[in-house]
Structure formats: structure tokens, C-alpha cells
Image 1 (tube, one colour):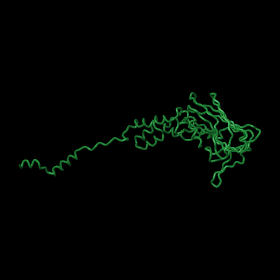
Image 2 (tube, one colour; image 1 turned 180 degrees about the horizontal axis):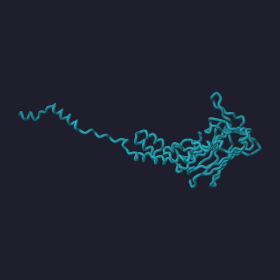
Image 3 (cartoon, one colour; image 1 turned 90 degrees about the vertical axis):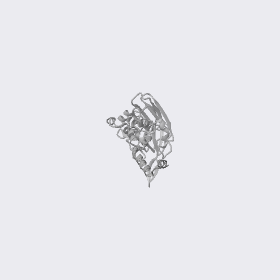
Image 4 (cartoon, one colour; image 1 turned 60 degrees about the horizontal axis):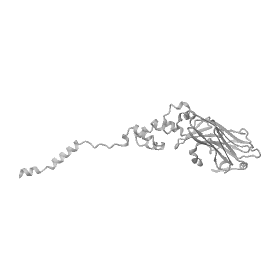
Length: 298
């Protein structure tokens, strides 16, 4: 009886002592793996398939993603195939070996001025398309040296801070040519024009159209030629005073066989039976055709 009672009775203090000893000797629970445990190389392989905006957002997660976001092969996939030719033309050959691919991408996405500031080129972030803009001072304008006809006027409405303004002329002709390493693709060339001279009065934009005349009589002719024999032309009447408009001259195709494309273009209205005037010429734009819809709001 006593033996049975002692065998079934347990001291609660002893039990708590054993429990505390068990807790002290047990190993801590294993931590769960996290994104930070992923090797940078594996993370970089995933980032390669994302767009630049997504890569930059994920780079803020942790150290592994931040390090992977600087991998050269990740950003080389976002660059045009001929990015080295673009660097040499726009930024200078000495920078090609000094910048990593992410820095090259960042620099090319800016509006980079070259050729004494008469041209700007940049990379579209969404499509990797290369865009080019040529200032009015980089064009051959008939009569530009005679202030009776043309004047350069400063304005904040131009990327180049000035436009060529035509007061009046009989022979209207603007020509240009350049050589540039466009990646393979189809491109469109536009003239950015405005009828009337814009200014600000009491903080509000106004447009003086008193010199606008002659553009409704005959259409303006636009033409482009490439070094490989392509030719395109179009014509239209200039209208819509007080607003900047893009007038489409034509399209051309770059097949990638040559390192650079030579292009000539012109805009003219040379019917000397009447004068024309009151026109602002800002620039010539070359855009990939797939970006034309976005130019409606340029």
C-alpha cells in the first residue's frame, strides 16, 4: 500500500526543476530562410528578365538584391546592341571602359548634347529605342544670316533654349544632314514648327501671329534621303497657329549592316509668287516608329 502510494506520488518541485533543465539544454529553433539568403548570382539571373524600373525597386529590398542590381549582364540586356558605338558618338570614346553597364544605361537615358550642343540623343527607357534631336542652329537655313528674314530668339519652349523665327521670305528652304549609329529598326523624322511667336505677358503665354501668312497658298514639301538609297517625301499645309506641331517628313529603315547611317533631309516652299512668314523652327526629331503615338503630346 505504502509502496504503491510512493510510486504514484510525484513532487511538483522536482518536476519544475527537470522542466527548467530541459529548457536550458534544448537547442534554439532554426530561423526560416529569407530573400536575403539568396546568392547574388541567382538574384541577378531573375533581375535580367525585369525592366529597369522593377530592378531599381527590388534593389531596395536587401543587400543581396542591391548587389545583384549592379551586375553588368543585367544592364547589358537593357542596352542597344551597338551601345559601344553610341557611347563613342555621344559621350566620347574615353568613357567606354570607365563606366559599368548600369552607369552606361543611366547616362544614355539622359538627353546628351554633342556636336557643339546642336544635337541631343537619348535612350527611351521603355523600349530601348534611340532618339535624336537637332537644333535649328544645326540646320542649313536659306537667308539665316539676313535679319530681314530670320532671327534666333531665346525661349523656354525649346530644349535648345532658342528657335529660328522667320519674319518673311520668298524662298523658304531648310536642309540638314548627319551621320549617326542608329540601332536596327524603322525611324521617323519630324520637323517641330509653330506658326506665330510665343511670349509671356503677366505670367501667361501669348502668341503673336501678326506675321503669319502665305502657308495656306501652297503646301510645304518634306524629303529625306539615306546613304543606302532610301527616299521618302511628304507635303502638307502649315496650320494651327500658336501651337507646336510635329510635321512628318518620312520614314527610313536601318538594317544594322552598317555601323552608321547617313541621312539628308529638307523642308521647302520655293514658290516665289508669294511671300510667307511668321514661322518658328525649333528642331528636327528622329524617333523610332514605335514611339510615334507618344509624340502627339510632345
